[in-house]
Figure (tube, rainbow, N blue to C red):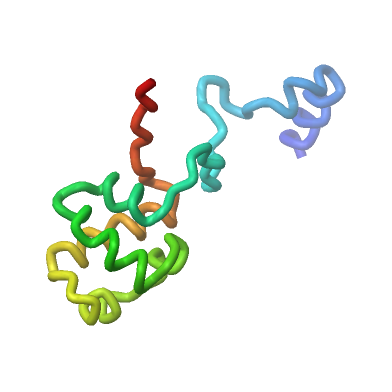
Length: 112
């Protein structure tokens, strides 16, 4: 009951501060990733990972098509395409991170 009174008193006193962070000094966290300005395709994705995956760009673009299909592709499909185990693991690891919004390929600055 006391918490309700404190919160009601706080909203009457200052409606702006009631909508702000409940704990000062901590930012709001959102699990939604912010929109990415640069379109990411299979070449940008594999180049962002590096480690020799650039060699599979043509094969994956012709067989899979776009990045959204690559993100849900399973290991057996990648194996049938002739991608070795180490590269399959890297693709699947970074695809999972990309889906969760924990990793994005770095955008290289445009050279004029």
